[in-house]
Image 1 (cartoon, rainbow, N blue to C red):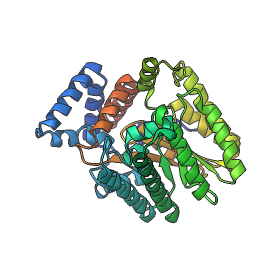
Image 2 (image 1 turned 120 degrees about the horizontal axis):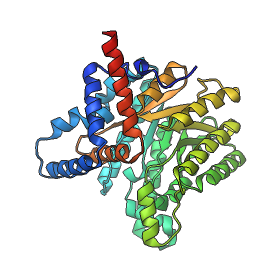
Image 3 (image 1 turned 180 degrees about the vertical axis):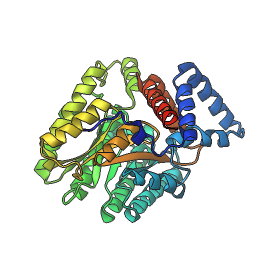
Length: 390
């Protein structure tokens, strides 16, 4: 019977030194005060070009990232594969504003697709549209495309051309690709573009996936409408299902601009909609492919059990579980050990460039109730088990 309590399986890849480092790291990021001070110091030190690269790379970067480039991720890819867990290479460089940077990012994403094509242990690729475009331009287009200038329209077409290039590469190499979700005030445009790509590439197989954030109270209805549109057009709708990553920012903006918050009233509502979305997708799996991106134990167990209820095999390629590297190993590795399809998001990029991502990970572990405590408890259990065995 599937259980997430087996820490021997969960931490099989970690040496005693790795466990100690992870324990220290989660202790540190479990303190909001220390995280706040640490963030300020890190950004200040990087700005002054102080020699802290080595420290970052051996600590928080080592926990949550696979390497500084694709090749450096090979060790992580191979290690995960020994446990039956796939890798999703995620180029986690953010905040760029120049066209040359957008082009470079596009090429690196295509390079991850080529890497996936050459290695069976990389089942998916992924990208964020804000990684290949200007955020402000997306925001303006999302509000009203009629207000765009001729130059802005040209740049919008460049964005769409980059998306098409990435999805075409994915289709040509038979590598499914996720389009990540973003803030609600640019998400409508992303949803439209994602479905345009599905209409082109999802007729024979699910190549393009859109990401749906269930902490938004309108997403269950959106999912049902998406299924109708996909069914009508004879394509499958690829879904990466997550709870969401921009809750506080969304609520603050809604208050500031005087519109109703798109976020659920409470966590229970988010959990209920997430599980309802999983059930709906499995009930209509001929129209969907699902990647359940969750660190929630209960949702993961429910999905695993619901597969059996619907007569869907554990290794059905239409259903995957996914978690972030460095987090929830007890879910990832125990699922894989039990025969389910599992992949880990493996962020990569130059240390300085991925700091915004790493700082978000620190914030998430600080703010998500029970997340850090759970990781610390699991690590402690494994340390005790190893000492008893010795």
